[in-house]
Image 1 (tube, rainbow, N blue to C red):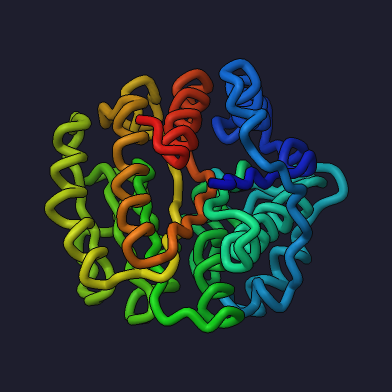
Image 2: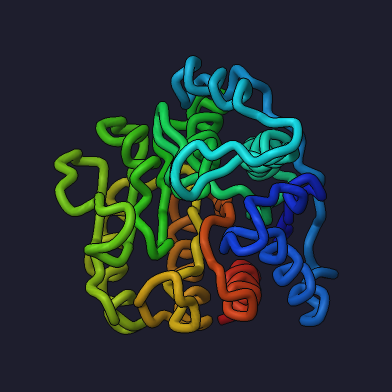
Length: 308
């Protein structure tokens, strides 16, 4: 099995301030862990390209896209919402993060890799059709899904999100699109205070109560995600890989551990083997305790190789 790892140094330059939790050190911690574990040597490394603007406009409101480009500052931070800021390098990083998602789809659809992980920032799953929020500017996983549908002619793509925060942006763009099945777990009630009342038939939201552990998470996946994924039979699975539901991550109050991420990844691999020729694209979302994040990404990637 060939596992592609897509990133770019530009993603390290995006900086929203010294005390902001979504910081460059997140990628450094992941890279250091992959090298220390020896896993880095098993990956096929690719440099993320800049996404073409029209591909952003296929997913986001063109006026919104234009506003993000226009807001890009030369020096001082520009805040698009209360916790989402642009610095002088942010736009370039966001274009690389979205470009990585497109490249990941290209690699798995052309057989150059069976699975791909985008080690990028900024994340994307809170970015709505016409709004930046929650550290996110462009919705990387939706861009990946739409590229697979529109460029490669796939009929069914599943997006799976296990970040501790609900993927309001992904839901905003994808709800009602029957070509896409969206499955998510998240702490509720919690930021962004969405996900509990979506009536769209293609959305499977599973709120988890504060304090829920791996057993509760696994039961939610087995009871709610896996049957829907089996009946939907996706031709590609796209993962919003957020690791902030870890018990060591103080951004929230769920209690997953490293092995839970390995377990859910293996379940997704099994479905991908049945219906998608093994194809999975995964993109980094949350995860703010550096040690827990690095270990969880390691578990996620090892599960792609069949290790749990």
